Image (cartoon, rainbow, N blue to C red; front, side):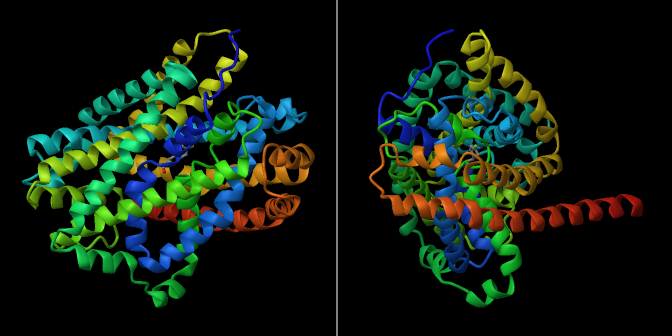
Length: 447
Ligand code: PFF
């Protein structure tokens, strides 16, 4: 079997991990979640969760990955606890289901790039969304997006993922910065900033029970946690890297990109008087495309925006495909190219129902967000905190300049705070899923 690759540089690893973290979650769902959950008040809760839960949870995946130097399924056996492989397996399954519908949305983005340049959505943004989001065209663009993802992963960790993300991340940041400057010149900019940044604390206190689980889900998803991706990426990492320092850098950059995206989206929407309000995925596409259609220079800026979205989605999709790929490549004597292609084809098939019906896509999304993701994070916390805490704390200090106090605090945080917080989120999420299923069932009976 070929020797296992590693990242060529520390920066290479950080770019790859930021590439995974920065995605549709930052540029798409973050601004809209913020908008529909009370603006700045949501932001405060969300930022607290990112740093208090997301950052320590990222370190859990890092220690499992780097200590074992194995893929997320074999890692647990390598650390001496083969019975726990199911936790990693669930994470890998989560990343495959996520990629199945994530790639469909990536396909929509491809259609929107073309649509910006041809002006196809300028007349009727709603009709355009309907025609590209579900049906034959959506299956086709899903296939193209998946092929691009496979193309990068097939080249491996260094010449595929590291090389691609080193170009993508700076491109995303530069383009977004440029667009934020352009956004500031628009007439609606002031109203947009106001909506984005002025807190409505009354809304927050009244809706805290729904805001917190939404913020937790968004925080973990945007940091690519709970899918074993960060186990896979950290397994290619050198021993002298500081895990807390790298994790901190990744969390901060990811948060800044999300904040920056808000500075583009809100001025654009307010420039033509669209209230972001209750923006689901589709409303968001329709509203923003509608705005680009009406603004001067909208064709070019719309295309630039959707290119940013494409790069962000691609650099996340490759991490989702790398996770199962690393398992097969580590354990079987197949070529990486063959493995990535076969897995890509299977995940493509899994995604076809969501390319045919946006309701099905919503279900995949809900099951991942509300069920799989919190279960996996909970299992990782129990494993790191209570089962393999010796090697875990040892690994955290390896290469790190953060003192023993930090390690102890982290351990107790992982043992107690994360399980309680995530456990509660899981209960609330399952409740929501059941209510949704019931509503659906009664609707079917009524019909
Ligand atoms: N973090 C990505 C985003 O914000 O769009 C999505 C994602 C990628 C989630 C990889 C999970 C993952 F493992």
